[in-house]
Image (cartoon, rainbow, N blue to C red; front, side):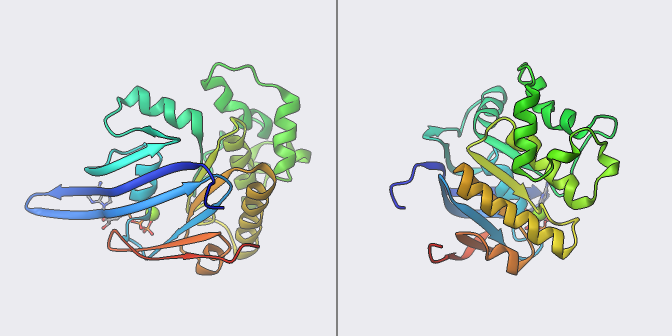
Length: 232
Ligand SMILES: Nc1ncnc2c1ncn2[C@@H]1O[C@H](COP(=O)(O)OP(=O)(O)OP(=O)(O)O)[C@@H](O)[C@H]1O
Ligand SMILES: [Mg+2]
């Protein structure tokens, strides 16, 4: 367990916002590691810094203090293009809103990231990816023919198509009812177990958050507590 490869290593991460004379310490000195094959959830009340932290770890935002490495490469100080390269190589993203394009089929939506990478879609790979999220029989449907839970599964397949080492999901069940939310978390657990990827999730839902291997609770931009579940 302890010699697992580290995918993300953040040390003393800070993200301060300045508004006139006021400073908002959205992330205030956080140390965080994410290793291969683990599911980590970030809990905490609204405004505690979950999204800000996730944006830093996703290289979508730059810390105002501290250091961040992704798969052993120090990313602090890299250019916008270089950061985009790190993101594409390592990470897939899932959002609260699914952001599926309404005029494309499920399969075409899943293949979109490949177009941005100028890679030719391979329908067999797409169907295989849809099978991993339990949606192989919806490949040729349009997004508005899916339930909310199915839309989020399609969005997860779209994140998986580039074979990321780390899936990052900010409030992925924020728009879903409790049964669909649970089934998305079960899917995440299965992906960690079967595909060996790592998953970082933020959630307001304590019960779901505690399905992760490690639970990090934030308060006022700091880690209030970090817990580890017994190995299942
Ligand atoms: N662009 C910004 N400018 C100034 N302050 C900001 C900015 N973005 C976020 N903040 C502040 O940083 C703090 C953390 O916000 P963040 O969005 O990370 O919280 P969160 O834990 O994700 O909350 P929620 O559960 O509501 O999504 C909040 O106090 C917020 O008001
Ligand atoms: Mg948030």
